[in-house]
Every structure is written in C-alpha cells, then in structure tokens.
Amino acid sequence: MQHHVSMLERWLAPVQPSPILRRLGSSPSPEHEIMYKVVTVIGARPQFVKAAVVSRALRSRCEEIVVHTGQHYDHGLSGVFFEQLGMSEPNHNLAVGSGSHAQQTADALVRIEQVLESERPDMLLIYGDTNSTLAAALAAVKLCLPIAHVEAGPRLYSWQEPEEVNRIVADRFAALLFCATRTDVANLEREGIRDGVFLSGDVMLDLFMTMRESNRDTSILDRLDVTPGEYLLATVHRARNTDSDERIKSIFDAFLQAEEPVVLPLHPRTAKNLERVGWYDRVASAPHIHLLEPQGYVEFMNLQLDARMIITDSGGVCREAYFAGRPCLTLFPFTAWPETVEDGWNICVDADTEKILSAIRDFAPSHQQKNVFGDGHASETIADAIVSYLDDPRPLYA
Image (cartoon, rainbow, N blue to C red; front, side, top):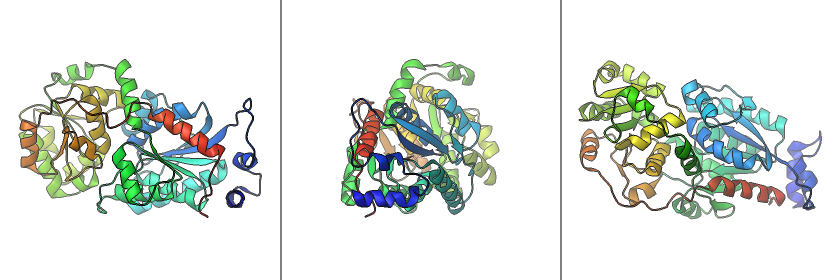
C-alpha cells in the first residue's frame, strides 16, 4: 500500500496531496463521508447515453468532473443529448473535432493530460471504444491514475476495426472493468484479465427502461407519414461501410430496392460519402426513403419502438433494437454483441445486397427474449464499485 501512495504522489505532489493520499491508512468514520473526485471523459453519442445514467448514480457520492473531447461536436450528435438526458454541461470542452485517428487521438491525449494534471482526480472514468476512450486511458496510465472502464470486454477479433484496438488498450490499463454481459467477462478471462472485473449489466438498458416509460411519443411518425410497425429504421455510420465505395453502394442499393418505407437518420460522414460516390441524390429522391438529420435520444428511441425492423452497423443501436424487442440486421460480418445473434434477434448480413433484402423479407423472430443485458440497475453497481475501490485502492503499475 505504501508503494501505491508514493506512485500517486509523484504526479500529485508537490502542491498538496490528493484526498486519496490523506485517506490511505485510515478508515473514515461512519458519520464522515469523504467525497472523491472522478473525471469522466466522453466524446461521442454512445458515451453521452451511458454517462447520463452513471453520473446520476455517481454524483450523490463523488464529485464528478465531466470532460467532453468534442469528438462529436454538432448539436444533433452532441448538444441535444445533454439537453434530453438531463446532463450538466461539461466542465471542460476540449473541442478536438474531427481528423484522422492519429490526429484526433493525439490532440485529445494532450488536452486530457492537461485536465488531469489540473483537476488531480482520484479516478478516471471512461466508456466504450472511441478515440476519446483511448486517449483518456493513455493519459491516465502515464500519470499512474486508476481507470474505470464501462463496457469492457466486447471483442470483434478483427484488428481492422479501430474500435477493437481502443477497447483492448483501455481494458489492459483499467483497474475496474464493468462488463455488460457474461460473454464480455469470458473474453477478458481468456486474455488473463480477472482482477477488478464486474458483471454490471448494460447501462444503456438502464436508460432505455427509464426513458421509454415517460417519453413515448409518435408525433415523428405523423410528420413522416409512416405507420407504426410498417417501416424499416436504418443507420449507417461506421467507416468500414461508408468509406468503401463497394460497401456503401451495396447497402444503399438494398435500401433502394426495399418494398416498404425506410426511415434513415443520416450521419454527416455517410451523407458526405454518398455525395462522393454520386448516390446522394438517388437516395434522397427515392419516395419510400425518409432521410433525417441525426436524431436525439428520445426521438430515436421512439422510432425504434415503432419500427418493424432495425438495420444498423452500430453496436449501440443493435442493443437498443434488442431492448425494444425489434429484429435487427447488422451490416457487418460479425458483431461485438453475439448474445443478440445467439438469442435469435439479430443476424449479420454484412454489406451484401441480397442478404439484406432476403433478411428484410424473411427474418421475423417471435420468441421471448432472454435477459442477457442485466436488470436495468447497472449504474448503481458501477457507482458502488468505484466508491468501494477508492475506499481501499490496490497497488497499480507496480
């Protein structure tokens, strides 16, 4: 334990010891609850969704400093989520913006390190597998700062996917690893990671269960003139699909041939690449395709709940389709969430026009879903584990 103190002191000194240093070696009295400081780093839509519920559970017990890297920066992909999910404005907005993987990660790394050195937290909290996640993990580990990683353990087993690199690095550095499913726990165990692993359940389920009870609204369907249960909801945004001429054309060819309405909130990168390959006007003019701006959480949740089927390359949307009880087609040859496939509610059709069209026609699961993502109380489990760890931290990087 003494060794752990000295390592933290090397970056927290000489101004004054962190609260964690003052606590080591003594237990707080029951009547004196000490407030820890946790820095949360987020930067993209899926992270805003996850952080919304964890922050509520954490802030009654910790001081949370929220850092928004600006990886997603326009209102439709960022600001609207803070508004709808009741999140406080970030304490720090790093305005990293877009760029290559190297540029975005490097810019975020430098700026996050500056925040950590200024705030001197007891722990870093990160989510998922974005470049913001990777940058924050690298900044923290260089400062010997404990890391908690929410949504640890999913694996695609493909180094072609940049998200795979990000999540593996984050998992290697984390002191606390919160897994949404038993498969994620097993993946970590195969890699020799057992200490600090929790089967917390999926925080996205926490939010979905809460929001669907109080935010049902079908007005968006009236504006689109589509009937509940009689349209396809689609999202396409992964670089593997949008940056490849062949793949983006194959996917949108299937949408053009679909024999029912397709509601398609369009990511800016997807719109740009459709323009690049000369297909944007063709898609936009199709009478059965409804192109939308990126939607807020509430609007998109309602679109999911009323869709007949959901078609996506997003791991988060794949899980939300499962929560909504809607069949899902994944536009990859694999998924990081195999539980949805094993339970018969998701199939991987890749960017294959004929497979997509065949699945649109024939895929219709009707059996009861299994409870594979937890009970909707993952955020409480995570907050409890963070505070318990900080009450008695173990040596790191020894």
